[in-house]
Length: 116
Length: 113
Image (cartoon, rainbow over all chains, first blue to last red; front, side, top):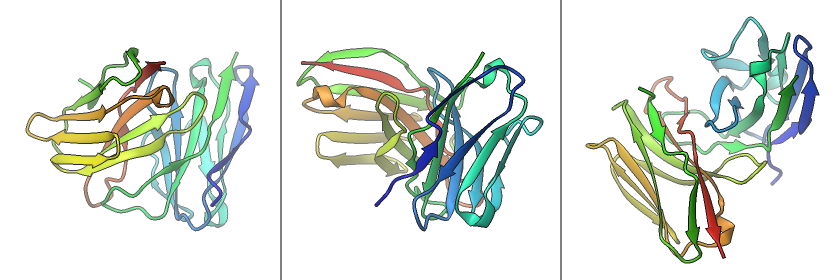
């Protein structure tokens, strides 16, 4: 079974530029998550999709971050304009379903963003 | 006070040692408790999960939850160099729309041959 795919793996941009990350979840997984992991910290949920609807985006800085999941499969996370503090690893995860139990989230390798 | 506290380490042990990793939490609503392992430049992978209080064992790994003390632990027996990674505790509330995982900072473990 193929895992969660993410691209690019690394990205270096200057502040105020824009950047986009792509995620392809495990086939058949209805729920998709985007996390931000700053160096030395645990992952922080930015947004969660159930199929192509948003379940939770309470921690997404909506003035600069946006995300979409068209057709309930692939997803794109965009930052525009980027700030220095956005330097982090952006992790995508997917799970079979989202419920009140500990459904397993499978993580991709992440995209390491450096903002100069 | 952060919802989940985890000592970031680093922790260095000799091969074969018993490793104890811990997290404390403040929110009594957490019902599901997980441990993730994250190798360098990789995404986290689920290692163990437990529901409510109790112990769970899987090979060399044992997860313990003490809800009365708001304290969870992961024990690794006969540690191996391949166990060298960052270990993240994570927890979530049960039911409704409370699906969010809250992670600790992670503890960096090195097992020396």
